Amino acid sequence: MGRRELEELCGRKKSQTVKLIEVTDLTRQIAEALDRRDEVAAQLLLSERERPVRELSELEESIRAYLLELPEERAIRLNELLSGGAAETEEEKPLAEETARFRRLLEALLAFDRETSIRFGGSRSFYKKFRE
Image (cartoon, rainbow, N blue to C red; front, side):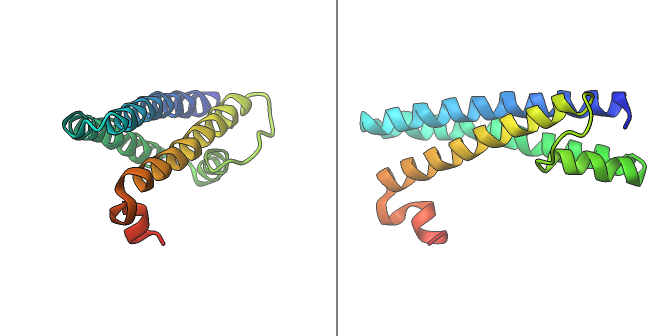
């Protein structure tokens, strides 16, 4: 496995983690605004949250495009790591750890977002309408 590829993907995954933390913070602020019944602030924060969500998606696309440029064998192994696979070497550990960190944060964000949406949206919640 190429050290350069591992470092490049680890850097991109860290960038995703930073964006995810930003989305999480904005989601928390939205929940706080809704607790205060400040719908104007909640709407503004919701609009503001669209940018880092879009940037997260763009980073994911850039990771996929990067993998497509690599030789098949390396791309397959890197995709395994990015999908939560365990590191097989010391060089792979940083990417595996960053991927695991990102996944934990994403799962926590999705649970919080779902709880907030249902709590404030009730039967009109995205999760109630389309997920149940």
